[in-house]
Image (cartoon, rainbow, N blue to C red; front, side, top):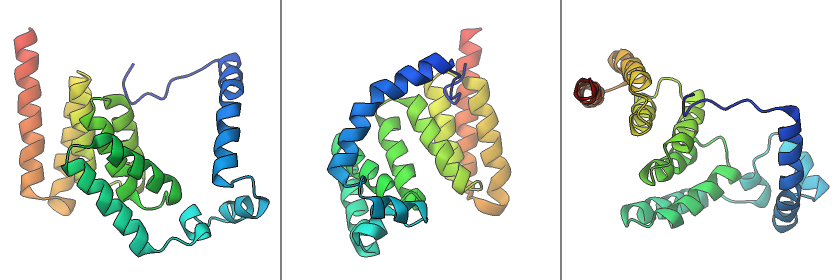
Amino acid sequence: MSILDMGTHKQEQIVEAIKAAAPIVQEALDKTGLQDKEFVKMMQQGISPADIIGLTEEELNALFTMGIQFMNAGQVEKARDIFETLTMLNQDDNRFTYALATTHQVDGNFSLAAKLYMMFLAMEATNVEGYLRVSECLMGAKEFDEAIDTCEIAIALVPEYGTDAQKAHAEGLIATINDIKAQQE
């Protein structure tokens, strides 16, 4: 089973998970005002929560910059809180998902990080950097063959969408994986 697998669950497990989550969801709805029917209607129409509450692009960018500053200062938890909030406020801005994934990767939570990077790649399928991050997460989880496959996708995208530095990084990851695999034999 790969860290990228979403897993399969029996119907009973899903029902139990929903029951267990219900109070948490209810509390979140109460705190955020999502129970407001008008708010829900607007979200169903595709309007982002950020737009509904009137946050400007400049305000979102300022929050994003603050999250980056926390990451640079090694305050990953604070950065994660900001990126989680931004991701909820505007799921269409892939920077937020990518940055959130980075916080999990830094903490060694490779499974969640890889899944978030894959969500990012679902919207930006030709983003070489996203494939490199997924490869690193797969390496961290010791899924070496999958990491090589993902590096090869990155390398294939480089001529049209990437840089020589990204190609060199992917090739370096593959060389490292091959060294690790050779030592294990």
